[in-house]
Amino acid sequence: MTLKERTDKALYLLKQLISIQSFSSEEDKTADAIQEWFKEFDIPFERIHNNVFAKNKHWDDAKPTLLLNSHHDTVKPNKAYTKDPFHPHIENGKLYGLGSNDAGGCLVSLLATFTHFYSRQDLNHNILMVASMEEESAGENSLRGLLPKLPKIDVAIVGEPTLMNLAIAEKGLIVFDAVVKGTPSHAAHPNDNNSIYNTIAVLDWFKNYRFNKTSEILGDVKMTVTQINAGSQHNVVPSQVDLVVDVRVNDAYTNREIADLLKATAPCEIQERGLKLNSSKIDKNHALVRSGLALGRKTYGSPTLSDQAALSCQSLKLGPGDSTRSHSADEFIYVHEIEEGIDLYIKLLESFLN
Image (tube, rainbow, N blue to C red; front, side):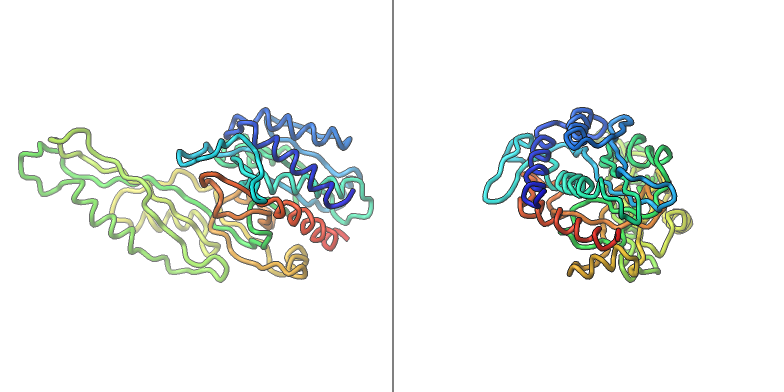
């Protein structure tokens, strides 16, 4: 099969996926469409919930395993859309539609790549292809929940839009709930302990706090207050102000270290929601990275989170499309990016798997 034929088939599937609503936990119909891809190529597959996965034909338990993974759920379209998010159509070389860039283009390119290698007998790794659910919501049935049911994975490529450059590290995430307290009172009476006024100094602390450890690849830890809520009516000073704090963690810290540090130093009560979304990386001298560099691709550290956070093995984030288009209005991916993605994935693995 030629590259153009693979691209055409991948684009056909991508248009199908765009046309089907597949918000996190509602991906059953896109899972059905992905099953049809495997059926068309006579590839046995399994499905757990809305996760669809398959092994290469000549699987050998004695070989290490390479995971190819991307997701088929989407966020909900924002109100700034001017085009129908579920109407896939091409204008000026751009395929428009919800999930086209994040991460449909990556998914169909990986499926085409997996299909290319499926029957090969000379591979030094097994290949496990997983089209996963609930990535956007980090749900219980996402890749994290599926992993215990899969074979041991030694290295992974996670398909997310990177302009086909090599994201050799990815920041982790911790979400904190913080509380600034004060004395509740009637607004007409004096109150030197107003929780809202107390919040000014707390916000200033969060804005100016700097973590000591930086990362060669991922830079500094980034902490941002993203939500604030207080008060019920105009004449009542509330007893507390609730904040939500988003912390993007580099590979110089564990999530536990960040949580312990903030609990000890923050000028308010603070509690993490969870610590499972750790930073990820792959050795810059890993054979996958060297193969990508030989193809002229660049390395960088990614500030955005993906299913890499679920993996304990070394993993590389790589895919067609541009991360800055993700979750944007009138989302699109260039048609040529799909073709380039399939071509580069295949060339990368030709080098790595032989």
